[in-house]
Picture (tube, rainbow, N blue to C red):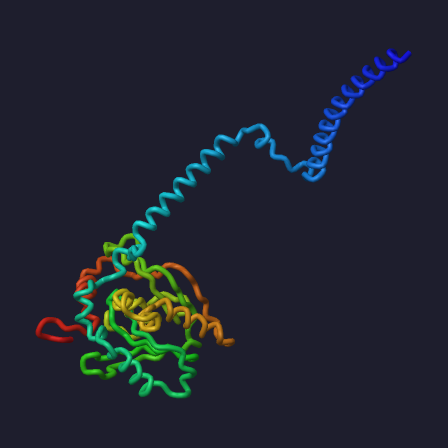
Length: 313
């Protein structure tokens, strides 16, 4: 009986050992199953991307990430190699009609000349009944016959004043008032020529103030280059605008900027409750087809006060 009991104990012990190992594996499997069940519970249902599971986009995503990394490293290395290099300023072909040497011949390029002339015009020509003063500019007026002329422009809450000023003798020659109530259309956009025109493109923006009520110009006005009855005015930025960009403040540069004038003019129109003026953003057509005289006039800067060799006019 004693031997039998010992054998039974050994067999039972072995059985217990085997059952212990099996239970250990079962516990491991159960823990894995429990972990997978917990993960399945945490993950939201129906959000799995089939392409990710199938590996359809794995190659493309990995190659894209490598390409992006190489591109980013190349850009960083290029930026480190040229830390002070600035992107060059790109101007359209005809936006800068004069180079840096020629622009210095302008009397308005001299320091303090424009400011003194504008202040004189404000003091002499503006009165309280003209409305609140809003701003002043030196712009280029483009006439009906496509001739460029240098003009001082004053803006108030009631009118736009265009002034012809002699920057050599420093005196006012002529001025014209255009009341905002009379304006029916303001067009802001590119200055273009008719399709059949032989004049080269300007690639320049401008603003046109119109008070003709949409009616065509009479023939006596169209064919008269000295007519003063043209029912619109066209402005563009002064040539100094581009050459003042390097060493001038934003306020000084804005004096020659047509865009700044157009923005303030639009605000003045919108502030007038009685105004029915329509503001459009479209192309401004200059009715010039051959333009030999205007090209010669504009290329030589005849509409600007300049030093021309031994003469100044």
